[in-house]
Length: 201
Image 1 (cartoon, one colour):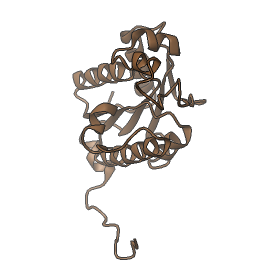
Image 2: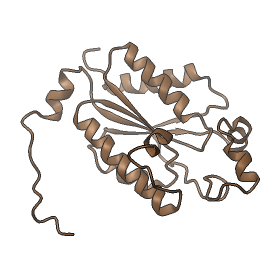
Image 3: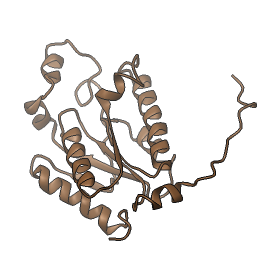
Image 4: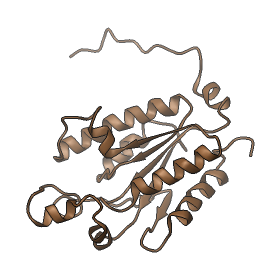
């Protein structure tokens, strides 16, 4: 389908103007890791801390998005890639609105994570690798998914029957098997403070 009749419309209000009234530098906090690694738990805790500081945020969570925007997508490599592509475009819009976006998705492929990074400006994509060993994730099994995989009820499961490409140069790494939620949040908040995401502080 041709896009020759579609023309980008420039807004009168810029991203800088939207973010300046929020007293923050917009960015994407991209949490990636295996199922059960603690992505959603830590992302929620970070958002709660940001909210406490009166920062403007929005949290995008894998399961929630698959119930709406990405309803109908499966777990083939192609569908996983499309899932992340759509999330990336949504996250980009939120960054343009001046928000700090928290995105908690397994996002197993480096190529797809890099494609989201390429959508925004330098410093607006912060990759947070929730580096939790597979055996720890499987022991936690909060959704009972690993048990179903072992019983052959789920195919194409990341970390077992489908690959997970761990980030090689993530801005932040969190080892949830040795770090508490509080210390994990503190590490992320310190990174944001140190790199100027909170203006006027």
